[in-house]
Length: 143
Image (cartoon, rainbow, N blue to C red; front, side, top):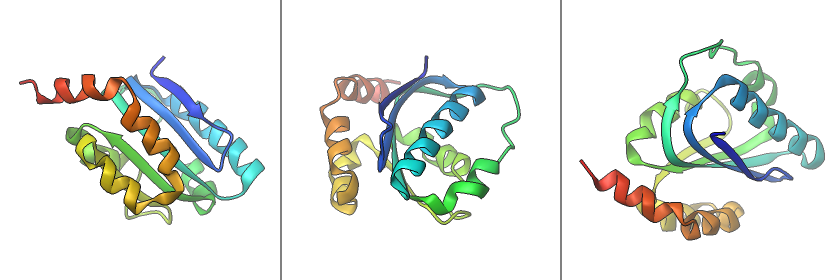
């Protein structure tokens, strides 16, 4: 399964995403976020892309009901991963077209990310200490 939930209790929802992401997996993450919203009110989210290979070509990816109904309930979305995914992640998360702040941080940007967002310091420490980080860095440096 490409998604491993790190924390879905809120107010910070975080997950590791690997492989190819399916629409049903996005729906599962949205359901976890909705439960956190119900418990905590406004939430933030962090997604760690590890060995991420993109999105499966399937289903109805144009369904933006969750964004329309719950964007007001999300303060920040941060994504950490290989720099090559930055633009596609911004498009997928509709950066610039939603109220929630959306930022992407490459592995080398983790310290800067932690300084900019004290709310998610604990989760960024998990990303920094994550054993897959070294694997991802060596993978991203290979041709």
